[in-house]
Amino acid sequence: MQDPRLARQTEAGPPGYRRRWSSTAREVSLVVDLTRSQKASFEAFFDSVQQGAGTFWMPDPTTDGWPMLTADGTPLLTAEGAPMLLSAQWLCLFGASMPVETILGSRARISFSVSVLP
Image 1 (cartoon, rainbow, N blue to C red):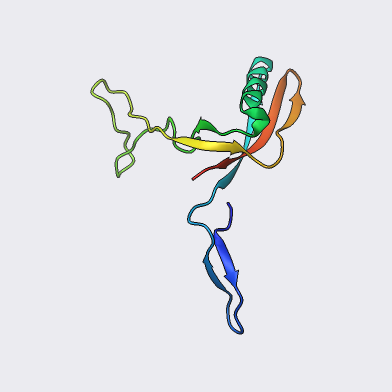
Image 2: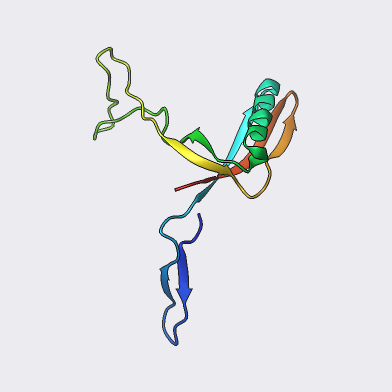
């Protein structure tokens, strides 16, 4: 996460801070394990966002698709008995470094970071 604070010089005592920005991007590291066809899709997607320079929407992996829970942890259900799922998306940019690929037999593990925009 970017530090939104700006340190102020003080003559004595602890350092002082003030806000530099009102909101900051959050850096998130991701690793995906892909088949050959999934790797081709990832590469085509990466090319489609200007080699990682453009923004894109992605499901929030910490929230999207998880069941909505009551205060005691019981899943909320629809009238048909199916769990109600949370939905959330992130507006992202690829991080400062390019994705790193590791070959695992016929699969590929791709490590990369994204900046989640405020």
